[in-house]
Every structure is written in structure tokens, then in C-alpha cells.
Image 1 (cartoon, helix red, strand yellow):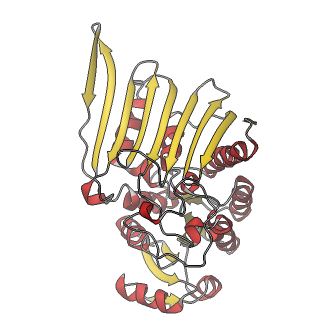
Image 2 (tube, rainbow, N blue to C red; image 1 turned 30 degrees about the vertical axis):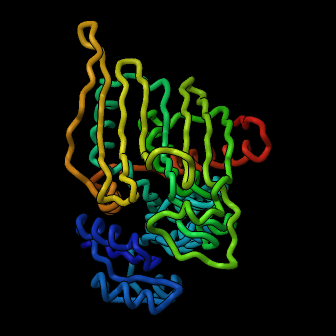
Image 3 (cartoon, rainbow, N blue to C red; image 1 turned 90 degrees about the vertical axis):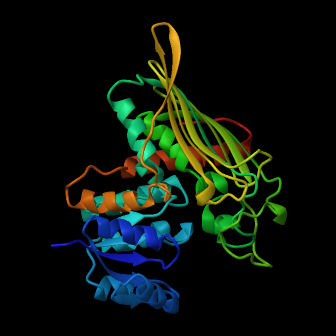
Length: 359
């Protein structure tokens, strides 16, 4: 019998979740949104039979086995816990929650319910990431000693005064919003346990409308803008591995760049997405490279994979259903989400105190 999925949130990410769930053989039976009109519109657009104006009503009447959570960051934890306590599997958008302690509460709820909890770290599901992970797992790369994670934008603030720029709602700015490359680097590294973190944030340009991105949400005239525009950090792990990171919505760089670069004991590598000046997916170029030594010579290999314009979003949602059905291993675990949020919390704490944070 097909897994019956309900979606909380009628926003733009619904299209990818719906495509992925259906590709895995699931049935999307309901959508809920606090804006009942938006829920009804989304249900009609994506051929979903039921629309609800509240999560509680959907859980009671929707007949769902699993729930996809696509809401502002502040509500990730509460909605996920509500669904888990109702006995439903949960697939939650990134970031996992506002903080590591909140992720801990979500994990406790999942353990108590005996249900699967996963997060949409969709960049792990890109063809480039699968290919690179293959080189890690087959020993080609060896031990990754150091890595550099980067998601930088020159003009990429997703609206002013809305929930993205309100720390109480979002948990922070680009560091928590664009956490994908930090996660991907730690994924390649084997998710080692962090030991020390040092970080700094910058708020230059965060109120300058010249730095707004070509997408996002409308500005709110009297809204709050109290998050960073850029964050830089350094993580040392108990394993001896190290990670540096640079994440920004607005920073004086040449172009938007999304990348993980690493140096292994046998090979190095780079997974990169470069955007055109408009910052849109249609102008992005994806590349995957491996750096090795052969017969005393430096050899740089370009790895060709299939194109994936949605950056793994559909495949990530598909994996959630296949993991529930026992047909695939989950692409991420709750413990990894907790570790990632601990690193993010520590970077913010270090930036606030001006001192390193030790675990």
C-alpha cells in the first residue's frame, strides 16, 4: 500500500516535495496551511484531494502516514514534534530547527513515536554529491583532512523585514539559511564530532536594498532586519580534521558560488555550482573534479554526471519515502542534523563573544 503523505505549507518548495514523493510511489493526500485559501489553491494546482487550514485538522482527518514540513524556520520544531506525537513520519525542510536543543526535542519525539525523522539536505542528493561520495566510500579519496565549504552571494538577500531577516523567526541569516555546503562537507568527511569552533558574522549591506536577490519574499516596510549578511568560521574536529566556511547573502565577491573543496590523504576534490550575474538556476554551471597524483604527475579529472537543475530537491524527497519503505538507506540522520546545528549555534556564539567555543 502506498505511503500517504500530507504537506504542511503551500509555498514554492511543495512542487519538489510532491514530485519526489510521487516518484517514490507515495500518494499525496492532503495539504495544510494557516492560509486556508493558499492550501486550497495548492491542492488544486498539484492535484491533491484534501486541503486544510490547520495541521491538527489534517492530522485528524487527512489519513496521512507521513508529513512534509515546509514552513518558516521557527515552526519546524513545533510542527515536526506535533506530527511525530501523532504517529507520523516527518520530512522537514532545512534548517532542522532554530537551535540544537530544539533538534534534540525533535529527536526525542521521533524516538518516542518510533517514526522516521529526516531533513531536506537536498544537496546530498545531487548527482555530483552521489558521485563524489562514491569516491570517498571506495577509498579513492582516503581520509579527508581538510575541507572548505562556501555558499556566497553578492546580491542575495531574500527580502527585507520579513521572516528571513527576523532572527526570532529564522534563527539567523545566511549561515542558517544556506547551511547546505557546511552539511555536505561534513557528510563527505564522515560527520566527525566537533571539538572547537571559531566564527565571525558581518552585517554590512543587510539593510541595503541594492543587495536584494532576484527571488525570495516581498519586503515588509516596518519589519525587522536583525540577522547577519555574512558569516565566516573554522571548525576543528576531535578526529583532527578541520573545516573552514564562508556563507553570505551579501558580500563583495565576483559572483554567487556554491562549493565544497577538500584535501584528502589520497586525492582532493571540488564540487561547485557557479551562477551567472542574475543568480538564477537556469544560468548555473555545475562541475565536479577530482585531483590525484599518477606516476609523479598531477592529474585533474573532470567527472561527468547527469544534469540536475533542481539541486537534488526531488531526489531528496524521493529518498524519504524509499527510506520509510525500507528500499533505501536514509540520506541523513537526526544525529547528523543535531551535530550540524551544534556547529551553527557555536559559530553564532563565537561571533557574539569574540572567543572560540569548545565542545
